[in-house]
Amino acid sequence: MKRILQHFIPGIARPDPGRRNTKGEWRPDYPCAYAPVFVWPPRPLAFLKWLVTWPGFMWPRNLVLLAISAASWFWFQPELSRCAQFQWEWISQLFLRNQVLIWLVYGSYHLYFYILKGEGTKGKYDPRWPARNSRTFLFRDQVYDNIFWTAGVGCALMTAYEVVTMWLYANGKLPYVSWSTHPVWFVVWMFLIPFWREFHFYWIHRLIHWKPLYQRVHYLHHKNINPISWSGMAMHPVETFLYFSVVLIHWVVPSHPLHFIFNLQHTGLSPACGHHGFEGPILDDKWPTGSYFHYLHHRYFECNYGEAGIPLDKWFGTFRDGTPDGEGSKLREKH
Image (cartoon, rainbow, N blue to C red; front, side, top):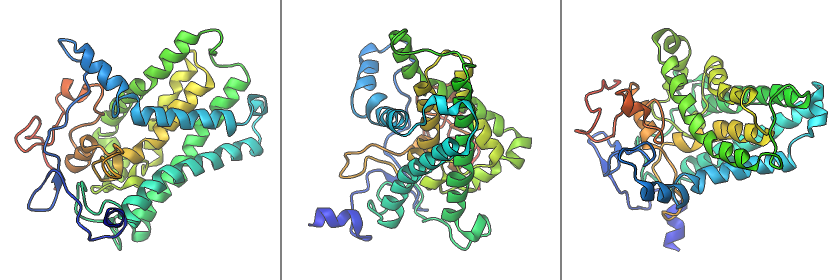
């Protein structure tokens, strides 16, 4: 009984691996590290283990997102023939489906961490809870503000990209590849999409940290110094437009609509996992989640623009590993 209550009653102590400073800010005992992909000398056994074991590249995040995308395509996607003309019926179907997915993913993390407080403060990077009665946010509330930008503006622009792309596919205007004719490329391209996403995200992120764009656009996302799950797509519409431009590669590279949907939904849903403000694993240490790597970007602003797969931050000198005396520790802290 105590094991069950520990997940859902605030105040019942849970082990809190890691360290907290005098301000109560949490960090893991180990430094942030990159996946064994772009390393020299090569580490084939470590790469294979990372690729197929839990947790790693495939399990659980990418395969779960691929399963969601496959379910969307096979069960909840309007037939391409219907998309040949812009009609409210199929457009609203896509918008409603995307809304449901966003509320299921972002809302589930928020429900567990912030309403039920299923982990208490275990692994919570910042000891504070979401801001209320704050002029920093719309409606003077961080949660309502973030929901507006993520489920409102974010979902609308996500759907707009999908609507235009499905119309182009339906009218034969995009390079198309199918499983039956090119099975090898079909699988390889699906495998490469998360890497393309990461590469694109780094450069778009560096772009919007350019001072004129930061002051007019990216500042909105960085209001969330203490991010929550709904902060994932809490962005200015210009940033959201640039963020989802990752899917435009399918307008050039031969793809199946399923490749596009996987890319789109990976882009739209995965920020919940990286912004909810906790380090996993959770649920009795069974479910890996969280991104201290990205939390450091929200904390210090001028580091960790990418993710922990392709070491672009390391190559371009913007990597911070999270330890007080570790790599990047001299980067300017935002006060």
